[in-house]
Length: 374
Image 1: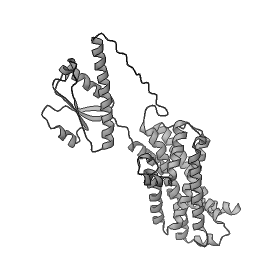
Image 2 (image 1 turned 180 degrees about the vertical axis):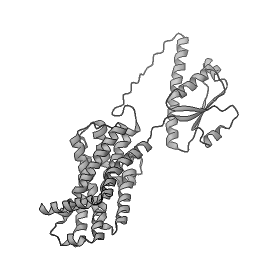
Image 3 (image 1 turned 90 degrees about the horizontal axis):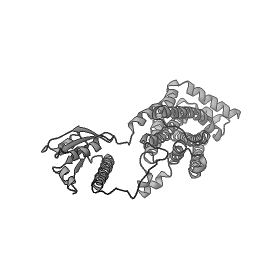
Image 4 (image 1 turned 135 degrees about the vertical axis):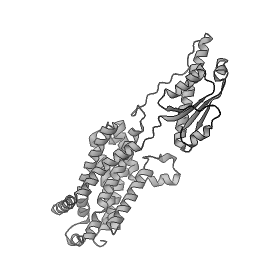
């Protein structure tokens, strides 16, 4: 225990001598949370809409009102008949163009269906699909209103066969921020933890103090734990700051047990810190260790964890690769605790996977840090 305490004190002193790096490890994750939290948003609102109303009837104005009175579309242009509508979309003056033909109101009054046209910018297929869904929903609501009025004029009281009463759990407003922020937390913690320890052993090599550790009566496990604990404390402080920023800026509240969240974070951080130590044993310079740590932690945490891209839509071979990414399991736990209010008991598989990952990385780091390998 005395040898372990000596390593911890030594590492803390090294961290204190570099206050800039300490500030970066603590403050940078919160800054990145703010940056990514506001920049990443899958909510599609206020789509720029151009309108070409060739009918100019009360029926056409009612249809236009259903679009413009929603939060989905903003009317930005009213091109006259004959104008080049494709050019509006090509120049990005509008993301969608609604065209109402001549005779729209007359055809509806006669009880006949009449087509309307919606031109969409399909360069961004995801946004276009969402906008198309909004337009279809608004047109469907307008169809129901027209049908109800027709039945009432005929003396028939409309009685819908189905009455859908949706109730959205855990995220009633369907805000993508509530889904993305927990993913950002897992992503930022992985980067912070890996980079904080990726430079540890390399720093010892460059300063020539590694030889002192080699002759010191230290076991490999004591060296790993001694170098990990100080950065574990820094990472926990960064976690608190990130969660506080998420609460104040994005309204993300922790609904689940705090102790379960702490246990999950500790397990996740321990594996990430050990992975950083493993990288530091493979690199010969701090620059190389930084680059390797950044690439090996950032890319999998973004692309292969389910943070942004759904794992189930990936190719089968790539889905197998995601099982090696600890962020995949941590994000499931994090979203369950923060958004759903569940505890670790509901995520035994994910907790087991994180524990297995941590043990495997610690074993590999121990082999690399063995004195005959240093």
